[in-house]
Amino acid sequence: MPLHRVEYRVLYGDTDQMGVVYYANYLRYFELGRAEYLRARGFTYREVEESGIMMPVAEAGVKYHVPARYDDLIVVETSPDPLVRSGFRFTYRVLHKESDTLLVTGHTLHACVNVETGRVCRPPKDIVTKVFLDTGR
Image: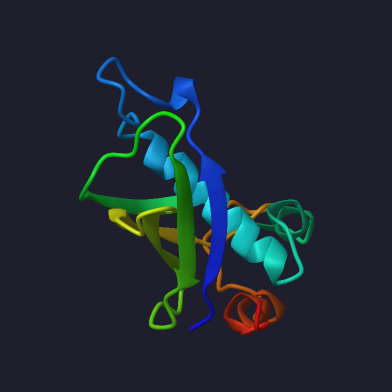
């Protein structure tokens, strides 16, 4: 499956009183990875929404291995799960850039919702094709 990597420098505001990344911020890093994954495939969340589809998170899971700290350079790896048919599931690995240490693994599951009706719908074929297209980047 296609894989996208994006780097991020941990900000002081991302950390808690213990000096480590606050646990919920990893979901923000997943969002960064997912948004850049889609952008690398030639479209953005905004374009998906303008086409009449929303992709809300229906489920999220995070497993914490080693904490990231202020000023660490991390890498978020994002890839789609081809086994999900009714929406999209993305998996993530967050690594420390310099040591390649695995910090966090996780996933998000997204439903496709019609903007006009608010009902769950199948993902449009053109979006599915773009999500699973291996662009070689």
